[in-house]
Image 1 (cartoon, rainbow, N blue to C red):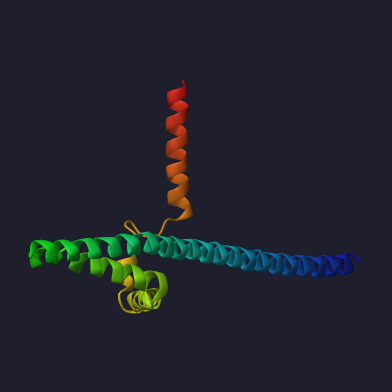
Image 2 (image 1 turned 180 degrees about the vertical axis):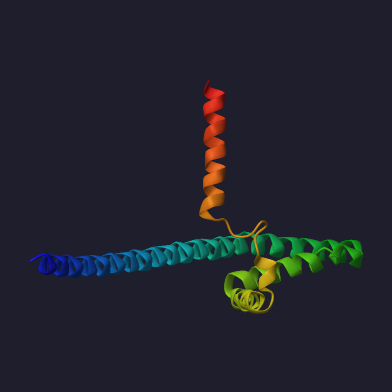
Length: 149
């Protein structure tokens, strides 16, 4: 009789462990999906900001270019056209960022860094561990309790 109960309990324990494993896997998949959606939304906001900034900077660049060109012609000083060069580089960068392939080149470079220069990504003092976090938490809570006394 005891053997049958033990066998039944083992089967229930096995089912419970499988259920817990399935739930933890499901929870992790949901967390990964949520984090990816948050990342996508942040990137979309950055791209939208870049496009909006380009509209304002493009207007400024156009007005500055027309004004500097008119001033250079009127005063016969070609040196007045010099600010157009750096402004043009900034405009080209913003255009590439907003509508060009900058994001793809950045992703490719990031993948290259991860693949070939992974040691540059290491955190100072290594990856945080449960023990290091607990030690910091205890130190902080101990400091707070000392300050309250």
